[in-house]
Image 1 (tube, rainbow, N blue to C red):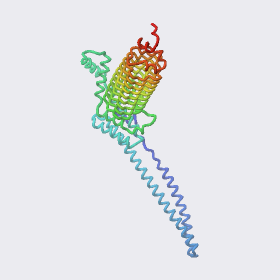
Image 2 (spheres, rainbow, N blue to C red; image 1 turned 30 degrees about the vertical axis):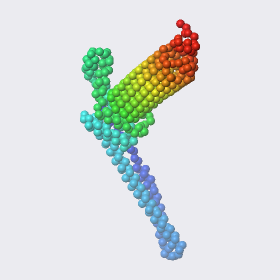
Image 3 (tube, rainbow, N blue to C red; image 1 turned 120 degrees about the vertical axis):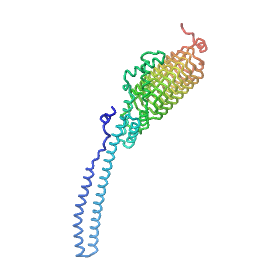
Image 4 (tube, rainbow, N blue to C red; image 1 turned 180 degrees about the vertical axis):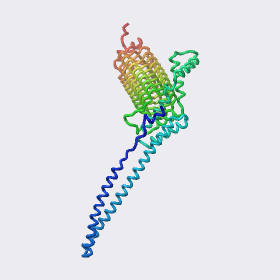
Length: 445
């Protein structure tokens, strides 16, 4: 496939120069000046004869004026000739540059298909230099490098027999435990991890540090189904890229910019995403178990049915995010921001959310059992149908929150004073002693 890239992508876009237009304009101006010069030459001859026959101040001034006009015309012809020569030189320079870029591109693509890793590395960095030198070829080169990564990290590179052997090894190492599918999946990941060679990492680095402002507005980097286990993408700019169903286990994306990125179904287990920017990204069905997202910006992101079990999101910003059906069991979310976030049906069981900000959040039908919300801010939050049983709400603020049909039985640290900050608090469920303190009648059996 690598050898056919030139057929697929073609050569770099040629710079189309039309020098005939410049020559036509210059020729027309020169012809007009020559014709004008001929007329004024005749006029100078006449004025000279008149001056010789009648040498007065008037005839001398007329002759001098005619002579100055001729000098100006001669100068104009010289200027036009100089400009024409300049256009010719510029045209030759542009053609030479285009030819050199084409030759460099062809050679670099050929290097990508080499068996030697040092030659492939040379090709990758040569393409980076061309992308820096030629704005017109920038995106073509990014597509070439993306395809190089896809082809080199595709599971199609492995025969079924090779996966089967690795799966059997996994089965033996696990003391013959696990299902066939589990061992098969683990075998695939083991083999994929072996693919993260220096050339793949180099291509990722080049793409991540590209001048993204040159990217076409209607184009996106395509990393669908790639296996980039353990990849180093620190501070990379991959905004708008598509990583659907990609394997990014243990990848390091610290400080990366992935705004509007599509990570639906991606595997990010044990990945490091600290301080990364995922504004408006799509994480639907993504696996983020044991991932680190401390101080990450996740504003407006879609985490529907995402798995955050045992993940760290300390101080992360999830304002206006969609977390419907997301699983945060045992996750650490101290001082995280959920302002205006949709947590409908989310699983926040045994999670740590002390000091978190839930102002205006939708917690309808959310499962909050056993979680710690000490000092959390729930002002204007919606608890309708939520299940916060056995959760710890010590020092939490419920100002104007909606408690209708919420179940606070077994909740810890919650006081009548806190409860009465909310609206519809009379319609929630509480333990018998707390109902008594709230002066509510006993629940009907």
